Image (cartoon, rainbow, N blue to C red; front, side, top):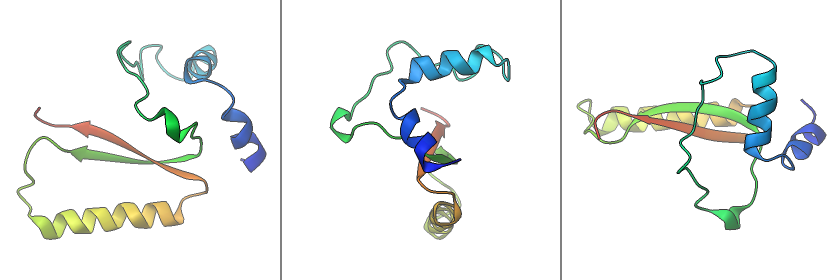
Length: 98
């Protein structure tokens, strides 16, 4: 995807983009649903658009594997960002016991 297209996408708000994707029938309408209480916490950072590097992370429970494996996983994320198309955006999915 050309950088010009990515820059153009920064002018489209998320609900409009989600509605457009829904019309393509590429996934269930309820997939990716965000609760209405979700809000932007860092407006001063502006709009972000890029290639997603996705990460699943357990944040509410201790990791029994120890710090060494946590560091290894962090390094894996850094390598994925380095090799990803640019601009890259890291997207975390939190899961686990809350």
